[in-house]
Amino acid sequence: MNKEVKVAIIDLYNGEENQGIRCIKDILNEADCRFPNLEITYDLFDARAKNEMATIDYDIFISSGGPGSPFEGEESDWEAEYFTLMDKIITNNQNIENSKKHVFYICHSFQLMARYFQFGEVVKRHSKSFGVMPVNKTKAGEEDIILKNLPEPFYAADFRDWQVIRPNWKKIEELNAQILCIEKERPHVPYERAIMAVRISDEILGTQFHPEADPASMYFHFRKPERKEQVVSKYGIEKYNEMLKLLEEPESIPLTRKTVLPGFLNNAIKNLRYDEVGA
Image 1 (spheres, rainbow, N blue to C red):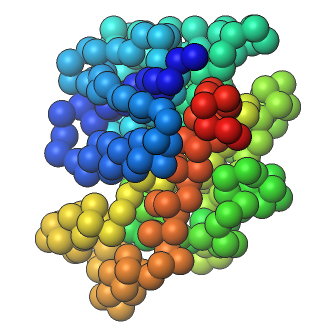
Image 2 (spheres, helix red, strand yellow):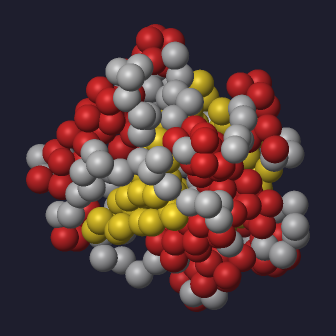
C-alpha cells in the first residue's frame, strides 16, 4: 500500500512577501505528525512569479492567496496551466474508479475558483477588507463536515481588494455545490454580502478568508504602519485594539486556524489512505 500522501502547494503570491505559505507549511507539518503511519510530503509551485505548475500526480492541492486582481492572469501561460490542471482534476474525480484529488482554494485562489466554476460574480470591492472579521455560516455551513466545528459566527482573517458576490444559483445547482458561509451583515452600508466559502464537492472547497492565518502572521500584518492606519481610519482605534485582542482569544483566529485546513487535510488523508489510518 502507498503510505505517502503528496501535497502540492500552488503559490499565487507573485513574489510578494507573505506569511501565508509559511502558515500552510506549518499546518502540513502538523498533519504529518498526526498520521505517524504515513509520510506527508509537499512541493511548492510558484505559479505567478515563476510559471511553475503542479501535475495531476499529487493527492492534495492547496492553492494560496495572493495580491492583485484575479483577472490579471488572463491570457497568461500560468493561468492557462492552472485552469488546465483544474480540468484534469475534475475529469479525474468524475471517474469513480480513480482515487479522488482533493483541492482547497484560499482567497485569491477562491476568486479564480469562482471564475472557473462560474458560481458567482467576481468584482472589485468598494474598499479593502483587512483584519479579523466575523463570518456567518449558512444552513449548509452549519452541517458541513468541517465548518460545523466552528461557532456561529466565527472569526477569520480577511484581506480582500476583490470579492465574489451575486451567486449564480443555476450554476450552483448544476454543480451540486453549496455556499457554506457569507460576509458579516453590514446594515450601515448598501453593499451585497460577499460569498465567503463554497463547497464544490466532497473533495473540493474554498474560502474567501484565510483559514491558515495564525496570531503570528496577523501580528506581522498589523505591525505595518500602513495597515494600522488603514484599519484605524476605517474602523477607529478601538476597533483596531479589539482586533489585536481577538488574535489571542482561543475561540477566534486560533480556533479557525486549527479547524478549517487541518479538518480538510484530515478528511482528505483518511479518504485517500483509509487502510493505513484505520479510519
